[in-house]
Image 1 (cartoon, helix red, strand yellow):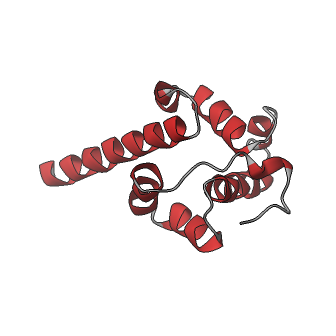
Image 2 (cartoon, helix red, strand yellow; image 1 turned 60 degrees about the horizontal axis):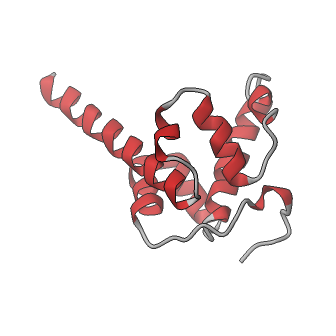
Length: 118
């Protein structure tokens, strides 16, 4: 049981550090990634979406669509494609560190112009 807890804590720390680096790459304060609710407001700012999207997360079923769209826009904001988005959704402990610690550069919030894809 102790091994499971240690592995879980290691994954949590890795994801927190990854989000911290992603926020810093986007020109936002890294500490914002550890503050509940505020971190999602900063995430929305990074992807170029308005603050009220956080309220849409509470709408049943539609909230899931909003969350997936936000992850997709995050990957597009760093010049990644849909395949990377799927990685962020299904294997976050691998793909968030790649985005945070890798060579991906922030391209700007693409949420306001969905036609702009590099």
